[in-house]
Length: 337
Image 1 (spheres, helix red, strand yellow):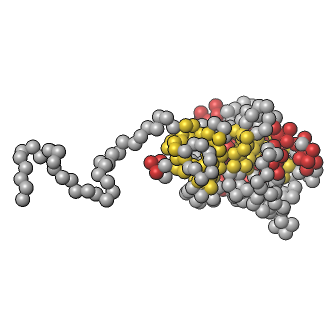
Image 2 (image 1 turned 30 degrees about the vertical axis):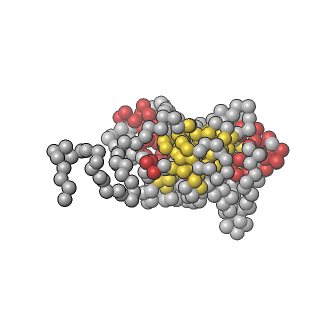
């Protein structure tokens, strides 16, 4: 038996080799200060397509990020092979702080929220005026999600050649939401794209709408060089369209002002389980002063709400209060109601 002196840290002491190596473990993660910045364009089964400078790079999320997932619109930091060549893969090591988040749940009783897009400036809610019929409750839900997530809403009404927009404009007029009315002829001759583009220049805009309203057709008109998806047709029996977009995709807007459009999959429902109703009032700055007299935890849709007296005194338009309460109650109703 070999004996050692009192100095047991001598160089000749042998260590037993380990099959996983002898490198000591550490909880200190590298800072990756030399990581390159990028923009997530789309996500597909764990692989993320990112724009790094002028190159499209395939990447995967680093294990050190844990369960934090990157979504379309995220600004990220990448290391590894950033050449963008075929069969190369980079690694996302950091997700930068988000300025806005559009989220939804599968239903109102689903606790799991899904981030649709990050860092978008505005949300374009696309609805057809006919074929399929408008769904105001779904529009209301999208507006609530936009207000809650920090996005400015934009209402885009398509197929005006089949039905007039007057009823919808009257319903949402009190919300002071910018809107655009388009027709099939306008999509064909490019006039519709020009009307919509005026609201998109220099911004990141997410497009959302249920299937068959012409959302992807409009996006393809705005970004004609992108032809990866074939537009579907509305089912004549159910009135519902087929899903022609299977994952969110960010596309550069072809205009002098720049900007991006994010085409999202068609939705059949827009759950709001993650929404705190108390934040919806922030989208109505003209009504906020009237809440000072409200009881604690007021829902703004109850008998003791101070907003009723505030509006009766002439401080705000009654239509605005009605619109607020319609949005607040939208979680209690189904989209098709």
